[in-house]
Image (tube, rainbow, N blue to C red; front, side, top):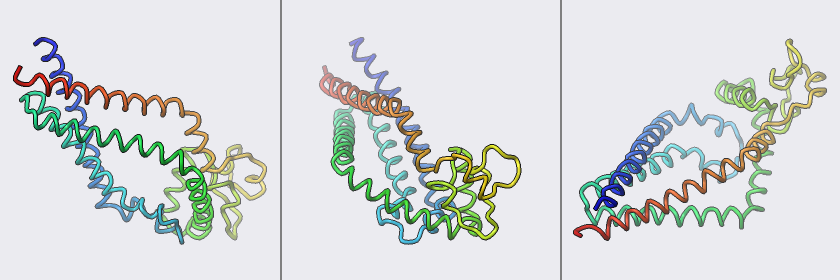
Amino acid sequence: MCCTGFLKIIMFVFNGLIFLAGGAILGVGIWVAVDKNSLLGILNAIDNAPSELAQLANVGYLLIAVGSILVIMGFLGCCGAITENKCMLLTFFIILLIIFIAEVAGAIVVLVFQPLAEELLQKLNENFVEAIRNEYGTNPDFTNLMNNTMTQLKCCGYNNYTDFVNDTKIYPDSCCTEISGPCTQTEAANEPVQGCFQALVNLLEKNAIVIGGVALGIAALEIAAMVVSMVLYNNVGK
């Protein structure tokens, strides 16, 4: 009886956090969907973007879907544990099992279709460079987003400074880290500032262990939650 009460508390706290996280994601998703044009304006600047990349325009709806699922899961888990409702506990278990299977399937797909991902990145490279040359300096949304990205990642362009083509030959300050004045073509060429794509790859590789640990931690929590929900399900009425 004491063990069951402890498991109920664990389920309530765990799913309460899921409910709050789902509510936050749902709120962000609604905001992104409403303000999609300004927030994701960069995609409109990329001509002939891969069809897969165009789906990023629907990121707000994806967040809404994910947030809604988490809210429902949190509600079912909390109420199912407190009220000892077998239907809620079973529904919670099924939803969590489907999510776990989808995550495993997604990991397998990424490994199997890695060459396809490389091809997509190559297409993105060509189209993004074209967007930089056509939109940087003329499209305020695109320019601000590029400047913020280059500042945060300490990078220059998608590949390097050659992605920028302009008549004045003045490049973003991020392309020249050793000078205080305007960044000219000569100075940009003499400084080994990496492109933002490579900077992002390096960042992911540097934090690969952390990312893997977080993924394993999430998987362990999901398995533990499924086990606890089934224990409570079997103890209902006993």
